[in-house]
Image (cartoon, rainbow, N blue to C red; front, side):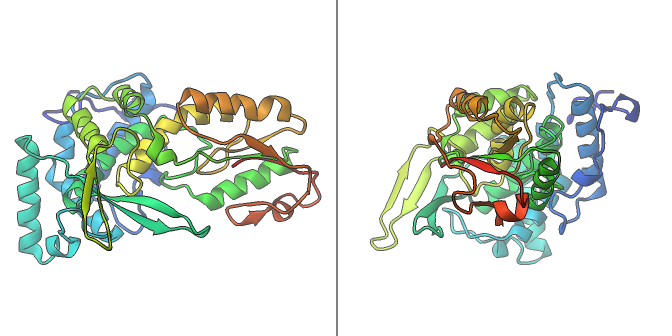
Length: 350
């Protein structure tokens, strides 16, 4: 059945594809409850996507503009907190009181329905890392974060239906602890070789053209595609903390680490690598941590390197260390803790 003005089609329970279990997807952020009507939409989208892997959704923009979707998006953005973007508007201003909040939502709905909404530049700040370096973080405006979250609520069930079962990062109902449990189980089955692949500046290196083609494989809605393209191309603004000088430049590559929709897009782009590598081995967590049977190093990490190069991403040449040469760890767990008495070899792409 065609839906009027919103999602292209409804899928019945009988048309659900294999693995149709959306319960763990209903609350992507467990501490913020998704309204029942939003859950129903997500369930419909997920079942349709699961049942028809080649289907392209052609009416999604109307759902992104829905009042209940925008309200749910605002609730999640409020829960996540965060600083003001380039316009200086704090989330507390939007949530000042019920009247202010409702007026703000109504105004945003009108902007989107009349296609007057425009993505603002992204404020870039640098946060310190443990190694003395800094990590660039992009901060969209509150308005952009809410619209991005609305898009995530609609698109996430569609892309989630396609994700590899052994991918754990930035996914609803999945976390690093589950990844650790998976690797321990793999060790018990005799798989105790590890490749730790570190993609260099992954979020900042994703090619826009290839990413948009992947998005377009699942939706032909031009308005949704235009939204995502606008967020990707939004200028980057930096402010010198000493002089106060503001510089602005074009963003020709990557999706800002800090953008609400960035984790979903990053997972979508990396899904091809997940499937190419993990159909032969078992993935681990956010980056391609994979395990092969003993002795597979001759054909293990190089095919993965080729896959990464085909995606036009940056990585470093592997530094292969001899067994137990020194302690190493992933996500806080060391080889000794994970593998015990097994003869473990670790290959690391730094």
